Length: 286
Ligand SMILES: [Zn+2]
Image 1: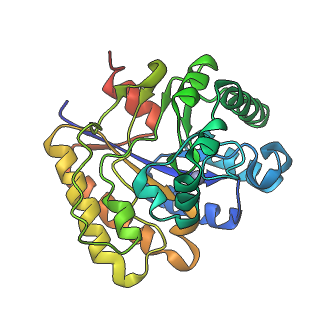
Image 2 (image 1 turned 135 degrees about the vertical axis):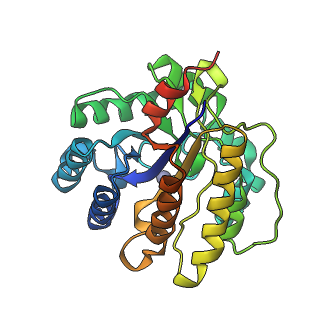
Image 3 (image 1 turned 135 degrees about the horizontal axis):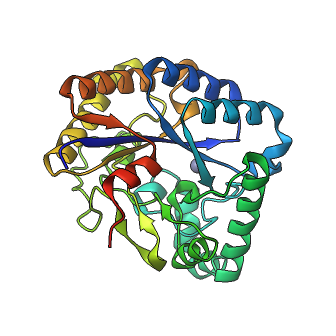
């Protein structure tokens, strides 16, 4: 493949602060960049279709060419669909302590029956609200388990985006800039066949979690070097972000993307796509 496919993803729509989501939509309209939003079907204990403000914003997102897919059920627990990766637990000390204290209890909540029930209920609300069945899924705090993948396959899902190529983005969140952690050797930066036949389309990292202006250059350097490295190996560049952590008083995150979009456009062979279009263009892996 000669072109680089660039898919920005953004989590937690349907949760708090819809006005910040609207701010991101305005930015994306101006940038003409399509995004895949992972949407909570039952955020804060209320079904999506009972939230008129969110419904209007999500319809606007679809009209602008963005993609909406399923995220968690109610996002009420760090362990909702499995156990998050270590670098994620390192930024959530309470959850890490619980996982270390009672791993068996945590894992007992991830039976196929329970995961299947949560996926089915989330999918039903999503369909009722938006009029189509989601095909992609992301777990809350990237928590996933083998039974969750099986439940996704059983409910007609095609792909997920939960694996991480470069955990350094989370080390940066902890201001641990010198962790020197290598890219995950078992996570290639492109779609691949994963558990239960689900196609995994991994994210490279998260780069824009509540940045201040002083963070600008350091975080831009990280995302730019990851982007260049993905291009050098002919991979696909998928990133994770959260609307409320890059808008309002935290717009440095938008400035990081603005700068990267400008750089990507200057190269002439980068295409901004939703995750489903990325998969179409890349081709379904064996
Ligand atoms: Zn989330």
